[in-house]
Image (tube, rainbow, N blue to C red; front, top):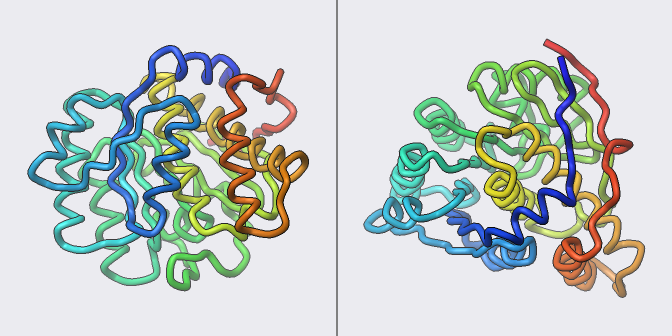
Length: 276
């Protein structure tokens, strides 16, 4: 089995050349950061979340993110309509099952989205991906708590069960397709002190999915996750910050600067840890 070719610079160049329109149906806590990160990567953000128009908006988009951060009955219907439009249009669809495993409602909605839609990439924290794989997980609110020694196995199981690419974000990110799981070593601990970095990673994956192409979801997931982590490192090392609030600004600036100063290689940040 050949390893996926990961070229962050090429992915960023493709995004910049196409200005992909990315529609995000996301939560009301981090919507501004999600829009800004889309723009900073080189995409065009649109935040249509009205069931009356979302299918039409997604039909003209290049990628779609569905984020379960705030779930209500209308939002569930909107996400399904948006996801169906993405599938019909053949555009990358990223689902972020925020809080999966925390309540029966979130578990039901997350499972429904993955079961009824053709999801290109599912992105969650370690607990959410474990819950989606049917394993025990401890979620408080929307945060992963506890230790998860078998994240790679859970991500691989999730990828095979739903025929998707699973991204389990945490101190070490795990990305799995149906055939193998990989660890990505990139990022900074300050990223965990800023509300919304998980949401921003979700839309990063959607944007990279648009740039890399729906036919190469594992490559898109690896490239996007590495780029996101490297931006976190650059913010910590070179940005002017004094705490979580100013670090957030430094991080957004680092994302914006990535396209003009892309990493030469990401091979040393990716390691295959499990094969099917």
